[in-house]
Image 1 (cartoon, protein in one colour):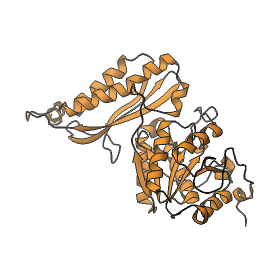
Image 2: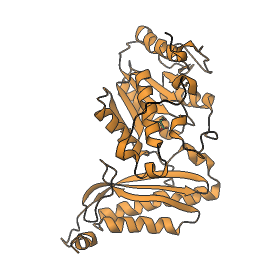
Image 3: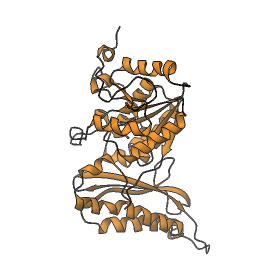
Image 4: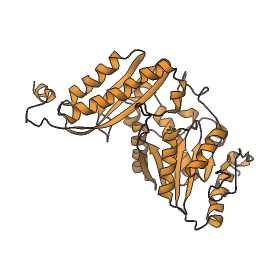
Length: 332
Ligand code: PAF
């Protein structure tokens, strides 16, 4: 029986080249599973000094320098003879009702031109019916508790939708290594847990968040911001930096949260969904007496645009040996 997705004909977007290393013509663009399989197989036969190592970057397009960092790192991970494959797919399953699925920016030609300069060899840009030939899948991956807190509480089902498509794209692309941005920290954790819990044979690499000079984390959704909203959005990175400084100075978890929250509350047009100081391994809130690594996470709406950001912090014990306010409170 032929998989419905495989009956589709390839509609290669320009620019496209042979399924060899990205040359001046840029990466080869495929839209069907069978063309993807061919592009992966032909690689081994035609690329100079080809190895069978494949690095994959999954995106929803509307690429920016943060995505290109992932692709450059993928190039390094794959090695000169390895293949770098980028997927571009706006996954309906991870958007809730009333979210921006329809208006999410899509410009394949622009994305492919950017990828040409970053070292991508193949772009897989399937239509929804290639990924979901039978419509919405009945069986999905559950992110469990990770999918219920923070992002999961504000976007129910979002992380399940992410994991479901990530698993499907892993089956389609069979990577040795897959790269994800640290900006989506909860997503990265959920992907790592899926790989571990479901025994997937792929290495997951997290790539640091790329920021504009003023500190704003790059996001495809930044394109929705007016100039004024963009200025307001700087409160997110400012709050995270201030929280991290407090933590490094021995202020304790409660003060870290209070400092970051104070900055966000002062900002005009910023409506906070959550601000949380969490255990990086579980995304559960750390107790007030916590010391050691933690992750300060924020999600907020600026106008109609929802942004997320995070910062790794190290909560150090006060150098004078005194208790943090949290330690005191925890004995009450
Ligand atoms: O991070 C994203 O762009 C998406 O969530 C991903 C991983 C491509 C899945 O659709």
